[in-house]
Amino acid sequence: MATRDRLILPPPALAGCLYGALLRDTRGRGLTGPALYNHFPASPLVAVTWVFHGRLHMVEDGLVCADPLPAISISGPSPAPVTSWSPGAVLALTQSFKPEAWAALTGAAPSAPAGPTGTLDRLPPGPLRTALGAVSAPDDLPRLEAALVPLWQARRRGAGPGGAGHRLGDWVTSVLLRAATGGTGRSLRQAQRRLKALTGHSARDLALYAQVEALWQLSRDSDAPLARVALDGGFADQSHMGRAVRRVTGKSPAALIRAIAEDEAFWAYRLLGKGL
Image 1 (cartoon, rainbow, N blue to C red):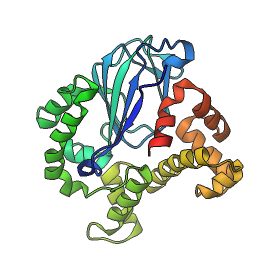
Image 2: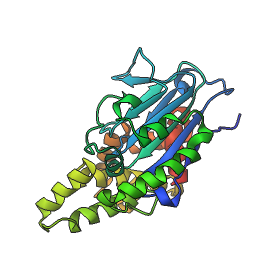
Image 3: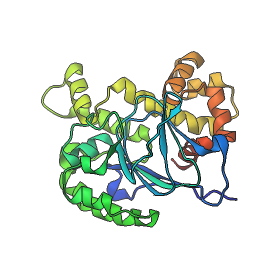
């Protein structure tokens, strides 16, 4: 059966706020065993997940957590790969927010959401919480986007305009420029502090995420040896690429390429590689 999974890119008015939404729909597909897992890369983004049908459980240290995710959950940036599991068919949607945009919308520090997944009631009452809580089906995403536009326009001044592109690399370039030119000081240390305040991340970490994202596209479009892919992707050599990819995905580059091509549980990587 053809997959109904989708990557949904944000409208231009929210390009500085949202990264993209991943829709997972396994109803009627009869998936079993390892195909019931969902693997995601480490990410600097804040994610809101809605589970409309079925159950999703987080996997920590190789063990499935006993309690399923709530119907709406919020998870912060993750420095390590993330895995979830469903005992059967599931319909779920995950919308990712750029960290400085989430901070502007919620008033929280960019690093505050990091750590265990939380529930919607961790947000203060207000229009953002109302808009997120009103999503009861994937078709409600355009309505959420429409509600976010005025909220983002009112709050975006403090976060900056954000990158116009949909890739992490576009956003990283934009936020590095804002950190370097914003504020009163121009020293490297002051720029690093501003970057940390904006995103909760260091320049090195952000560059790593962007490089690995670009690698998915390179590996998909090229039959070149991995050593050449490493150089084209901006890595010093193949060993450097291997360390970076393993940190973000938990796999070696060769194993990751095979998993993306053959493993159902790596569906999110396939969507991100094709859609961005």
